[in-house]
Length: 426
Image (tube, one colour):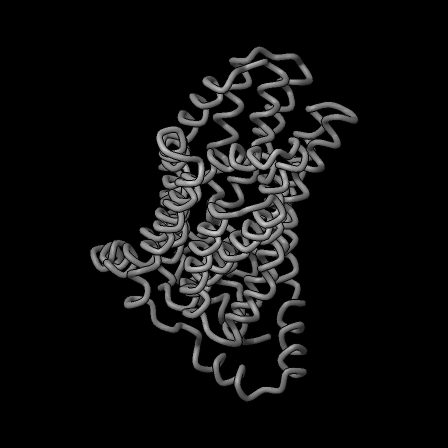
């Protein structure tokens, strides 16, 4: 049994259509990242305006969530999955050939939208086809490979931009996006369940909307969405780089120190990301999420104490390592839980709404942190993140865990079967 599961997890299908594309797309995005600020500055705009190239990319991803979910349920997963990286490549080529800053912003918006298409369609396909006993490893593996791509990309992109031209990394990004998706044309089949396809074709639009709203307004789904918002809020500031800004302003560290810290925390993070999937498949979907968010809440209090108590830089480094470890423990958790809770006949729309809520939380997090830090203190900002992480852990334990059938420790397959049975009963 174990050998069969290992074979399925490391199958050629997963390697070429899931892990390799995740790594390659993240690598390409990372390669383009160092060149983007320099390229934006070349249009003779000030810092505030140049920052729009980052903001508009996130806005594109945010606005793509709901439409992508509806398109997947209406037209199928495969078309969206293949179209996403192709649009990423087209947008990246257009970025490299932009003649004005507004034109650059349009292409960045399209790139953010396209990336969201791939992310949502890939997760939906896993939910449609992934076996319950390996789904956690599939999703956490995908996230782990993305993490490796993000780590390697900036170093390659910085070297390429310095050795050639600032536009070349964007062209390289386009090539990698096309290479990433090429195997999927042969390997990925349409995965939308037959019942969902028939409903999409036969049920009137009004009835489809009513049924979708009813499925999304159940108590377990609402509690999961609230937990997702709190989880994204707790982690959004950490992912967005505000902690690095805190280190710069509080301890006056330079880029070389930040780079060393990033490399060191990555060494901790990536093995944890891969291991969480095995734990979720073996012991249940919330087995790492609840302790992970509890530990993250405590770690953020520790970070807040470095400001409140004026602790030395060494204490901040320790708190950063604990924060990164706990954050990595939660990586992929919400995606796996969502893949179990999502109603079979409308997974696309479910993931569209779920992703929208997560994007809102991730966007609100650094904004709220900045307001609290400037109006009160850095400690207040970190404590707000700690409260959100605690809230996510509580909701996952009291509501989501029950909906998954994990009131006792058990294997992922049994928990998922109970969740499906509960869904059918409603």
